[in-house]
Length: 123
Image (spheres, rainbow, N blue to C red):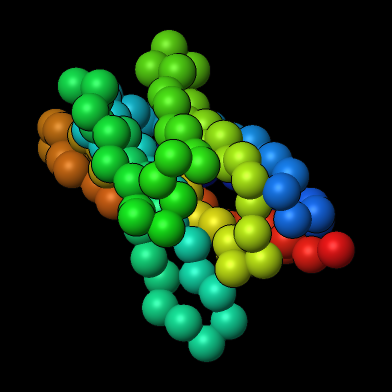
């Protein structure tokens, strides 16, 4: 099993910045992809940004140029730095990891979600 602990959400004024963190722990052999998704009330959950183990990153058009995803592989932690925040960025942000984990039967691929952290952009 893999556990994810998110932090960094909160209330911020339009134009402000936030940094989200997500730390993974457990029987991890390696982490392929670490990503952030968000879900606003009444809307589907969408990918915000993703970072692979090879170092490539991908961003949703809505946050491109305003957000940066980064990984600390030694700490199994992913960060999302969000700048120039807008009210439409308001959502619950979820961390997602795709991992290879140790089991009694060897390695297996696992897909895990964090509990979510609220980001509210409002004056």
